[in-house]
Image 1 (cartoon, rainbow, N blue to C red):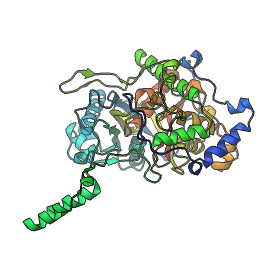
Image 2: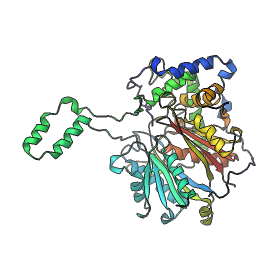
Image 3: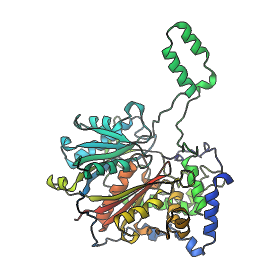
Image 4: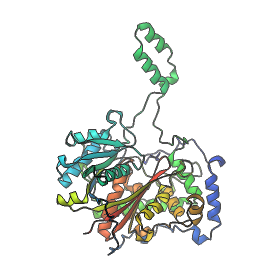
Length: 495
């Protein structure tokens, strides 16, 4: 989960921490290591504002080995949908999380025509829970018309919550417990829980237990003005009290990622997303008739700008010298997603043509202070080795874009032998993905990032791109709060 600057004027004034020698040890070491490299190596991440990076990759015809394993069930994703991802506080503002989740589930049912009673289990991811619907998976499933006999549970793992929902589904199917599982995720940032202060909560609980008028008056007399100060949800690391935006700024500084590079990457994301949206590539988006409002049928955060306009924005977290701004960060987003995951045998028996195989996956975890956002760097080599693949085998990369600085820092870390040897215990770097294969239809910076729902979007983008481009393997990766991360191999289903 992240603290992202708002598109509507949050300039990061709530960021209280500053860059200090105490929290910049890795930054200093990395800066020195990158400065010692030849300039060509240091600038491994080329300028990405040029038009060549805005071209869709050419259709490829590949013939590689399949990752089918003897004695292991093939698990496939049959279909996936998502509501339009909208800036928080816009069209979805009057709804609740389960409304979005229910819509995604209903959309999946409508798109696949799968009988509700065939679904064995439902798993949903979310991060900031609405207390009235803490198990949002169950409430949304009942609202969508699933059988009350179908179990449903909710998982939370920060920005990789729906990744966890999907891999939970994979485990249920691979172990033979289920044949058909619906996985998904939802996040609703337009209405987050705001609590009374702890002092006030304790007082109110004591008041509820008081039996006589005298006892009640005694409790009330202890209330002080500061008790009324509300507890706002802090999107920050519990262990470090640092907002994710601040961590992203420090990480960008550590890897010598300039403000210009970050703005260029953000512009690339928005430009590619707009191009994909106009071309109809974002086919997982389903229209949603919002009660009392118009039907929404597309993401509303895609806003290609210009380097000049982006350059005018002030730093959002580390002021006045930071490089993370509202323009090169993903934004607070409302949205939900859902995917139909089945055993290949069951899918074919029911007449479905799957989109892709879900293959090997890994979860990783690092120091949440200095390596909070480096999940993709750690997950990529591990999942490649697990699958017996190399970076060159991957045709499509879909990485979560929390911040442009976070993405570029990961790409530089992946390209660094020094980082691999000193931080990852590896002899050599894994290498950075070729940009022409990377997030070619935009990413979280432009499409939006509902914390609990993004993982499913990444998987479906990889599956659709593989089919469109003729590739065979996709690699999905994401960072998450707590210094965690996820990586998964997606294999195209034979056409």
